[in-house]
Length: 268
Image (cartoon, rainbow, N blue to C red):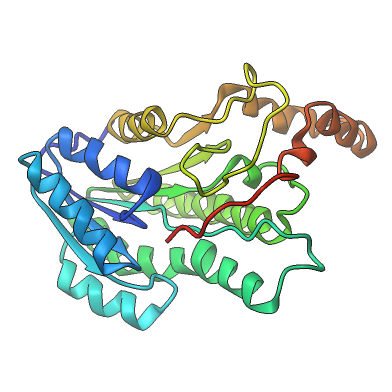
């Protein structure tokens, strides 16, 4: 059973830019009321106004999702949510020995701990109303470790585990709340500026508009997992090989060289 978005309230963290903004526009196009949470008040308000300019309902709130007290406070202002999209994320793109303590801690606070604070703020209401969807944006790097991503990849592995465990809890308790885990390869939003791919037909840098549309469509279809592109689905199968063979395959596909020219930008 899917989750039609018309008339529903969709909250997107990190919705002031990148894929978050595009998902907001796509959800609004399908008749949803959109709520933007973003660290930047100006960025969130800009997307809110863009959605309103297209004739849809939208609100925006400035909030640091890694601050659990701020999340609890703004959640009360926000009210009930039908679809929660945990999208906010950051990346450092540094070798372990080059990443600062602050870099590593920020990655975990934003990419992982924020999931607990934000999801717990709205999940109880979803369960009580017997409807809702919790969407978590993980990454292909949550399926396979990548050089220069010791903090990012590890946080996304944890994100994958978080959502899988949550799905099992909700199933076991026979709630009607669904989860969706999204594991995309690099998306061309600027967050991973400078990355490259060795085999663009198999592992393309993803188009942001197409990716946003596919995520929103997956919510409406009631999917539990979305992996982009489809070739990334071979990772769990290849893991059955001996580790040295697995590593050589990753080298062949150029996975550990993708971050060599990374420059990136901070994404709220």
